Image (tube, rainbow, N blue to C red):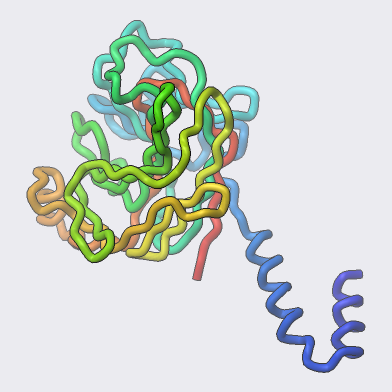
Length: 262
């Protein structure tokens, strides 16, 4: 019916074809969001925890319950540095990633104060199988998620394990840089979008950009990054893997969606 109506209007109104094509393109783009989380299990995802080889889901930290992907510490007596990451199977370069998350419950015993209501998504990451056995974080760009603590605390920040980026024409070597987002307190759901166009990246909340940067690159002074360079990894990063973090605070993800861009 919609196609017939479009044809009728275009026949009746000369010059409308370009507008219709534009609208059709927008509809097509909206329909091409790909769910990376199926709501049932961890299909397509590979866990990697410090001290464990890829594929071992240490203490069932990453799990699916009630249609929600959870980072849970219910089987831990005490956290002892077993930082974890859950890697999506596909290497990506140009895309938009949409994540709906929230923090719940109490932080795991043994977790550092900085990890309270702290999680994130790694982008342009090395693959799980290139990480060293006792490596805590993959060389990547972390889109850091933070929950409120009673004081202003932005989310969709940037942290750079083994990497650097350029902002406003300057090389940023500080490990973490805050976005200009507001604080999100409590257990509310928050939607963050990450727009990646090879070496140009934006973080968005509610459609508004809260951070942008470019030219992500390996830190040539970082020990693990040096090993990646020796193995042939390009210094300048324009693609990589996506990974969800596990940093001691229980977190839920009810939606992880990908829109591939040309």
